[in-house]
Each structure stands twice: as C-alpha cells, then as structure tokens.
Length: 289
Image 1: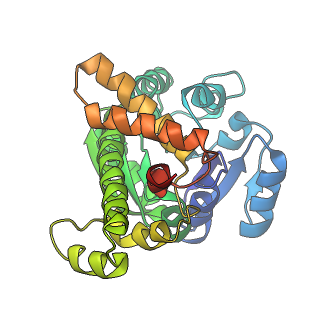
Image 2 (image 1 turned 60 degrees about the vertical axis):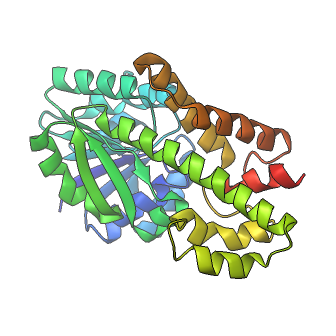
Image 3 (image 1 turned 180 degrees about the horizontal axis):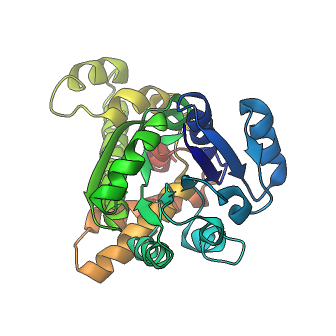
C-alpha cells in the first residue's frame, strides 16, 4: 500500500481516485477546487481530503493530477500551494491531464530540480473507461520512474505503456485523437449516406463491422448515432480542446493534419448548434441539420 494524493475530481478523476483507493488498496487523499466534491468523494470511498494541492501531496509516495488544461496544471502544481511544493524527495508526480507536451516537459524539469520523479500519463477510454477502471494510459518519462509508477497506475487501467521521455505520453495522446477524429467523421458520413440511400443501418453495420471498416467507434456508437442521441461519452468541448493541442503541436513540428483540422471545424459547427456537451459522435447531427 502506498500513500497517494489525487488532485482533480472531474468526471475522469473522481472514479480514477476511487479505483486507487478500493482496487489498489492505497491510502488516498484528494483535492478539488470545489471542496464539496472532495468531501463527497471522501465520504463515498473512505479516504480523506485536503484544502490545497500541497497539503494533499504532503508525505505522499505518488501524486496524481487530472485537471482541465495547461494553465490548470500550472496552478495546481507549480504555485506556492501547488503539489510540487508539498512533495517529498523521491516521490513521483503523475499527470493524467490531456495537455501539451510543452507543459509536460516544464513539469518534468520542475520535479527534477526537487528530486521528484515525473510521468505525463494522459488516458484514453472516456468516462466509461474511468468508471470501469479499464483506461489506456500513455506515459512519458524515464524507465526507472515508470517502473515505480506502473503498478499504482494499473489500479485504473487495462493498458499502461511507456512511450519515451517526458512529453511522449502527451504526443501519443495527440496521435490517438487524430485517429479518432477521422474515424468518427467517416462513421458519421457512412451512417448519413446509408440513411439517404434508404438502407437499414442496423443491417448495414452488422455486416460491415465484421470487415475492414470495423472500429471501436462503430461498435459502440452507431446505435445511438442512428437514434440521434449524443449523450454517451467524450464531450465536443473536450475534443476541441484536445484538437487545439494537436493543431498547435503540428504547427510546431511541421506535421500535415488536414483531415484533423477540417474535423475540428466541423466540431465548431456542432458547438454552434448547441452541442457543446454532446458526445463526439454528434458529427452526424451536423450532416442531418
């Protein structure tokens, strides 16, 4: 059993911290900007909560973060009341936020100066994956720190992999989002075309999902898409945040991602339709408006 802190109890962090407590058997202290949510988590899972990230991180072996963006990360980690200020030498800071590779390297440098290990560890699998403890975790950092952290991370994951040095986890998550963007748009267009052609979408997907067109998105989203329901997973607002990170990195490294840039614009259309909190499969709604 390790002494663990978890900072950020959103739709992902709340259940992830719960798995660290119940499945992992760790001593968990949580922090959240809204104290009521931290209190609720402590009551539900039997852990404790702290008033600041630094207080939560004090004397912990591992400190996890799962917040909104780069600026949120800096505020909960690099300030006087941030996690790093409260961490002991030899501890490990693990960041599950989907953020830029730049901020990952910034945090790694700050941790190194204090004798703390750092892993950038964005996740894939959405809210359902977090609740069920079956997330895929893409890690960046040194191998020694990764080996130390992997058994603890595994409490909420079914796949944990080291991709390279600090920042590599975030870069891998960008590849993940690039692939998803294209897949969902293709699925939306396929369902839309099939409807216009007068086909039975249920029958179509039953056949083509067993062939080369098959994907997780097809298996898990086509039914709700066909019903015009878009309340099942990763929100459009979150996807646009992630794609903005992708597009900024592509500008920096010279990668050509024209389809990703186009799908990002399509998600902007969905937002304008009122679909900010719809799930990412709502690209179909844009085609059917």
